[in-house]
Image (cartoon, rainbow, N blue to C red; front, top):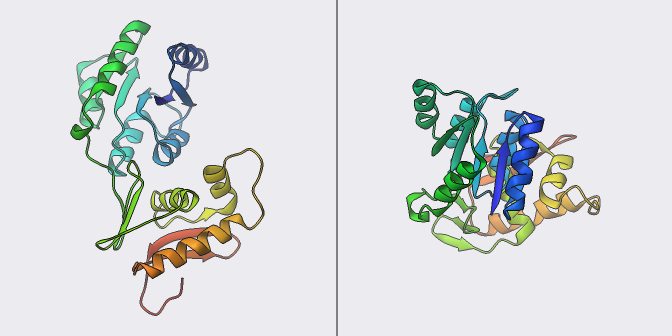
Length: 230
């Protein structure tokens, strides 16, 4: 199970991370709301453990933004806000459970197990769209209109990343880091080559959108404007 821990307190975050890892969980730790949003939107997590008092984008705003973006990952709020109205606000924003600090680690584990046991059919499948294009991140399926198309691994990951940031120009450096990782860098033109193959694949399927190259900046995805070029 892969968890996203969002906690700005270094000491507490380290304790929680190490504790969860000792029980076999894989943990990614984000210490501010903006970083957490990017990771939650572009990564596949089984659950989020979310502090509500964060630098940058605060926890409630982060939670609302994720739900509006279609991220349906179960969220356990872990926070010092103990008032009833605070708990209600968190749940109304899209949280699945709420645990008040200070807490017993055993209770955190129990609540996490309960979240992860929830039947998958109670969670609305996430679908990313652009015009006639539909992408299901969990099932790794893509359709254009009524036609299912096969998209290789890197092209799929790149398409998903673009769809999670509609209208936003993503630099080649950011794309490389997110899709290929921060280890050994791939060849210099790998982003351009992958984009080119993806464009051809989607064009053959009749997609009505486009992936636009922004000179000197990167790429963005959007709906085609009649008379314009991709």
